[in-house]
Figure 1: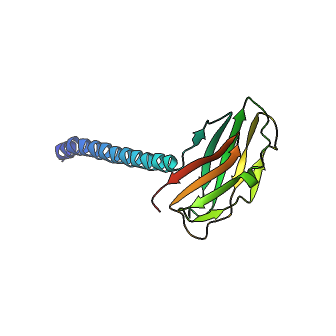
Figure 2: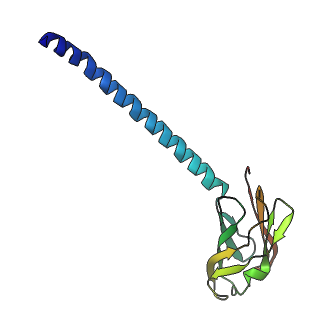
Figure 3: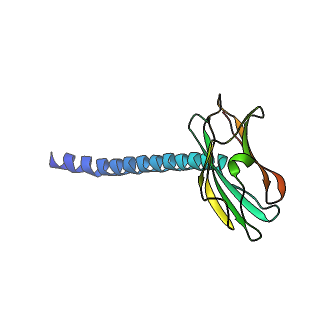
Amino acid sequence: MKIKSKLLLVFLIPVIIAGVFIVARANDKSSESNKNQVTTEKNLYSSQTNSEGNVEVEVVPNVSADKKSWSFQITLTTHEGSLDEDLTKKAFLEGDGVEKIKPSKWEGSPPGGHHREGKLVFPSFSQTAKSVRLILKDIGQISERSFIWNFDG
């Protein structure tokens, strides 16, 4: 009986080790797949920069899960003049090329200086947007700057 137990252990241990290895590899692949999905999602809403004229504008979108509510982290930088623009009056958001909305508020640094940063908040779209276009007018002597994000709805 002892010999049978030893033989069973000799065959059973490698099977258990192989099973653990297979499960661990499957978890790694699943984790890698999730990382790719997160990366793709981040790329859909990646930052965009416009450096025309004497003001650099960097925009990072923040979107709700239902793709109806949008806000944008905006950084303005210049080395000429002062950044005095009221972004709530200089911006609008266009959803799917039809609906245009004005921002509801600016949460950030006040007008003035060479560097400004804050969040431009918009009210919700009436329906889920499949693409958005943020327009900033008359910033740093550039009549219109356009930032577009497209994605599958």
